[in-house]
Image (tube, rainbow, N blue to C red):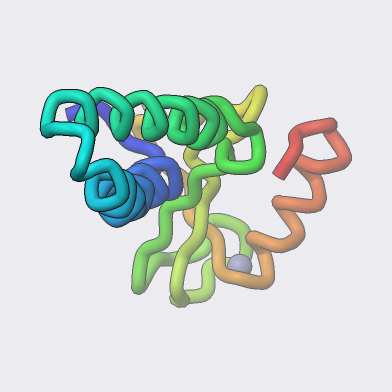
Length: 123
Ligand SMILES: [Zn+2]
């Protein structure tokens, strides 16, 4: 399975949960119009709302930064054993196919993040 941006995936799952009550309210409100008409209108309203929500989830740069966290690593910068962080993917930065991923402790990770920001990578 391809690597998935967990933030986008999580929001998408939440969005599915939100669509159910919204569509249920519409179906209940329109129950006097017949099942097919109520379902058609409910799906139309759902489409009008969730087109924009889905577009945000799948295209927003705000959700583009993907981190990987491991409980215990040896920091590639300082050599300390600690919880490890690395950026897998951001706009203009892709280490998703890195054969030797580099994890850093929290302190070194902050320094590395600053370096990447200075290089113009939006994190
Ligand atoms: Zn470190």
